[in-house]
Amino acid sequence: MNDTCLLGSLARLGDGEIRLIALPLGLAFGIWAADQTRFGYEASWPSLTATPTLLGLATLAGLLLVLMLSIVFVCIKRVARKRPAWPFAASMIGLGVTGGLLYALSPAWTFADLIQRGLPLRMSPSGEVTLVTVISSVAGALTASFRQGNLRLQLPTGYGIIRSIVGGALMGVGIALIPGGNDAMILAAVPTLSPGGIVAYLLMTLTIVIGFAARNALPGRRAPAL
Figure 1 (cartoon, rainbow, N blue to C red):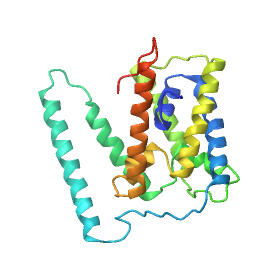
Figure 2: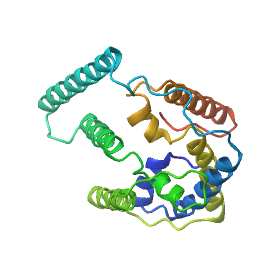
Figure 3: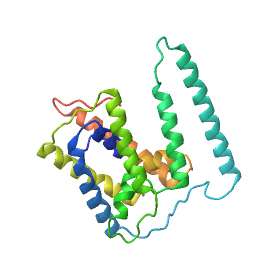
Figure 4: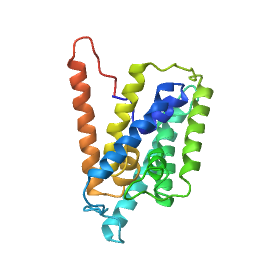
């Protein structure tokens, strides 16, 4: 519906897609509506690494091994390149490390957390750095877009604004119920072996695949490349 996830929305906003300014309206409505209708606030499936255990230690060791192997792989591929360029895999490693550190030091740092703090919810996330991290994220998106030459203002249309609001509302419901968006699932829930987060991530991925397949089946429509 919105053509991109929450982090992708920030990136596209940095590229000049003005319609995404309407996204917070949909997010706020979706989060508020889900907050008024859901039952309970205690996690029924806590992370398996929430307390010191051998499984938690093994998980951390495994993630560290994967990180080291990824760095070695990126370095080898970079040396093999004829023309030096910043590899995409290195960007993903940097995103994972910095995002993981942010979730470990201050879990409520995302754009969605900032919106939740401004709503009259029965339970709101706490975080003193949320405004700073959101401003930094937008500034980083604008800077990256400018450096890559992708910054082009695109005036919004009524249809585009409606899509952003409706898509934001759907994302807001998911953020409130899980809780957290795809960034929280990828950078926090899955690495810490949260059963609920893993199930939510798998269902989200399955839903996206089904949605692309259904859209691709429509006459004259093609799904974007994954």
